[in-house]
Image (cartoon, rainbow, N blue to C red):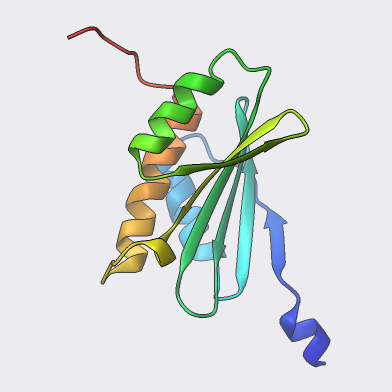
Length: 129
């Protein structure tokens, strides 16, 4: 029984057509100690909510993608850090555990929504100012 309780539940969910619907779906799907992952054209995102109340969002981008550098830059602007590159994938991680956030859920939802927008649309255009 304790073995089953300590196992992390991580399951795929069907991706709705827009970012706000995705955020609502994730909000209703994630319980403490569980996570979900979503696949996009440009990468895979994993959202995990631990039992201590911290949120972790990881994004894996293919190194073959022509948008990997632009999307990676957009993720870093959202507060992600580039964790590692292995097996043709670049991993970016954001976690509320590294921030001194009072309302972790709200901040995680804002980060999640920004991430979903980046992954749905590629990356924002870069302009010379």
